[in-house]
Length: 86
Figure: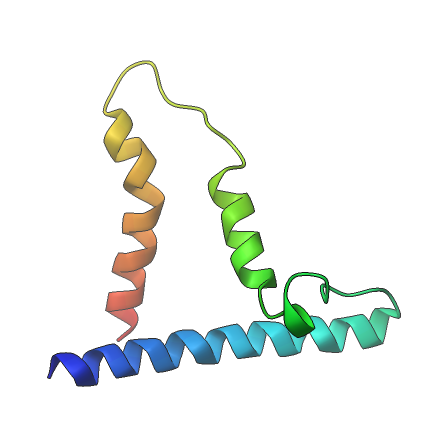
């Protein structure tokens, strides 16, 4: 059962990455500009670069309240929405 779930999650993840890559490649052709092909072979690491940039973009923590919950809150919201979509 665990192998089936991991296979399904990895298949969906790879499918989303391929769709994002194809979208970027199509927009490069439409807009006649240089695309994200500098991030790995054929630009397949661009999604990883975008995610890393987003993680380290702002480092603002509240002075009052739970800083741990503030830090992991966006990840919890995304994970819950993914599970609800299944």
